[in-house]
Image 1 (tube, rainbow, N blue to C red):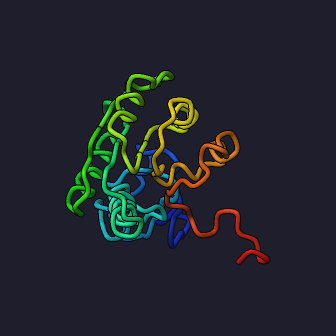
Image 2: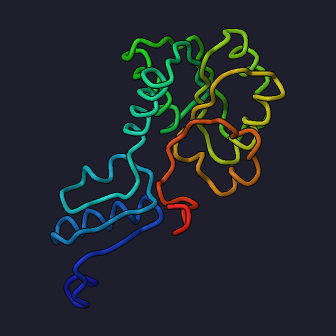
Amino acid sequence: KLVVEDGAVALVGDVFTLPAIASAIECNAWRTPIVSPLVLSDDLMEIGPWVFQTRAPDTIEATVLAEVAVQKLGLKNFAVLSPARGDRRATAEFFAEEVRRLGGQVAAHEHFAEGAMDFKAQLEKIRDVTPDAFFAIGSVEELLQILPQTKFFDLQAQLLGTSQWNSDKLLRLARDELEGAVFPAEAHYGSTPERD
């Protein structure tokens, strides 16, 4: 309707995965560009050449983060903490493989159940392998629990995360814990004409 009846030449949206996929299929069929700024699915762009995302796929982020950690920062011994299931676990496994491919070692890869709040067992196992770097992935709510516990359990490692760490809520509530962490951030975040 937007393309045929209203004459839209491009669309932006949707914010939810299933409607975004349906919209992408339709737009690709009508040869109308669609840009999805929020949907996290790496498969969205595979629908066709008329489908675009403003967010880098998780695999690209994981690759670049591994390269920065191993090649630029010289980190060798990694620990990973991720959910036991789902896309975030897949991203963590991809990150671990990239680290290995680049010559690093993954000394520990611990998992947690969705919605977990206590990470003592996982963080103690990770601390015991004395990693140079610690990659954690989860929801913002899970990260709000994980990050303070890394300090409590005295995990002395370079913190690494995905662009999800660039959340307003996480930056506001875990600012001290994020000090020195490395994670992808959009170039425009927090920029002003004076700071550009």
